[in-house]
Image (cartoon, one colour):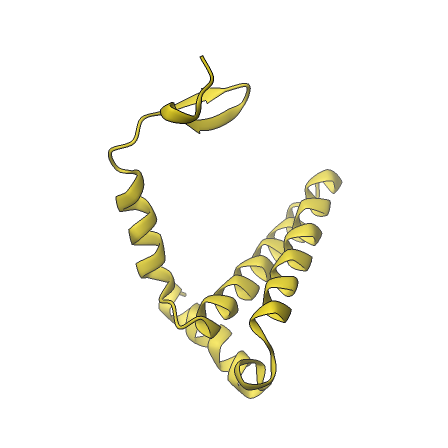
Length: 104
């Protein structure tokens, strides 16, 4: 299945369950955080299936949040890629950091 089809299924679920009319932005942000925490917990379990399921839940919750904000996921990703195109990054202490954020 391609991303467009998957996104359509997420949005269909949201409409069928009145998510976009009955939930608030704040409650959806809380849902994203909840799903993110569940995803992080599965990383410690070393269970690929659970990690995949929770990663999918994070994506669904975030897609629904973007929908509620009237943002197009592909456009958001494109803008992030464009923003970072000319930046210089280095891995420092296991983290990817922008060159201007590195303490010398």
